[in-house]
Image: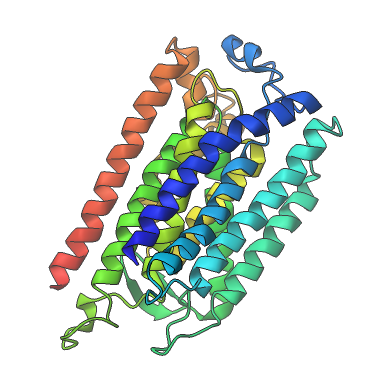
Amino acid sequence: MMKQILFAGVIGLFLTLVGTPLLIKLLARKGYGQYIRDDGPREHASKRGTPTMGGIAFILATVAAYFLAKVVTSYLDPEADAAPTFSGLLVLGLMVGMGLVGFLDDYIKIVKRRSLGLRAKAKMAGQLIVGIAFAVLSLQFADARGNTPASTKLSFITDFGWTIGPVLFVVWALFMILAMSNGVNLTDGLDGLATGASVLVFGAYTFIGVWQFQESCANALDLTNPNACYEVRDPLDLAVVSAALMGACLGFLWWNTSPAKIFMGDTGSLALGGVLAGLAICSRTELLLAILGGLFVLITMSVVIQVGSFRLTGKRVFRMAPLQHHFELKGWSEVLVVVRFWIIQGICVIVGLGLFYAGWAAEK
């Protein structure tokens, strides 16, 4: 099974490295270029017309890498269990569904020349339909141990507390999906920033999936302490999905880093935010995602603070929100902002994984 993780990552990387330039040529030929705000940093004006909707590349590459990894594994080792799991398919479905909503938004903005894209109500409706479908289906398909892809309990490094019930769970899942989608969307303002940050989080979830599989209650020899193992339905397959995403985003980053040849657009940012929330929900690390994806949370909070301060006092805290543009207007170069924000995201991942391991060690 570990081979699947390696194959998924390598295939995802290869597909976006090779496929993204083909997508760039196609989008450029059709004139699907990025709209740039006039009130942003002056340096961004040169980006006007850069092909967007690049999220198509890593969405398709991730799905292809997931299934190809299973085909290759089955061919090399017929005894291996390489069948897709409900958890893996649901998370991929959430990514594709959110990506489709983002694609419609991008398509209307770029192709139909309507600057605001989808109407706010239509965009929200699309996200709600995808999110509710994921939340409801994730409480189905119990395995032999009675575990469904998601749980109606809140989780940090494992489930804790009382059951919140299916209705509140759907509301909670929707909040996570919308919050992370918005966070990635706000972060996607500089070349490679959101893509590189996502690679780090997907790397963390690859590790978490492998660790949860190794310490799974289904494989445990000693069940006298049930808190010392993980009751997650398909942890290793979630690692396969994470590895495919990490590889696909890393290959896309080659073309998305400064100076970007292509932008992910809402197609990519909504898909990445959705799949991050899906991985957290299905791996029982919902609240831990706020730390693992700390950069997305920080940038989202900068917008909340800016808007709140202006409405309450009439004054702005930052020169411009989201936060990355504040530092650009202070004179930092785009590359400097991106690299330093990647470092912040790396620290968040290290802290998050440290807490994840510390929680396991404490129970042991």
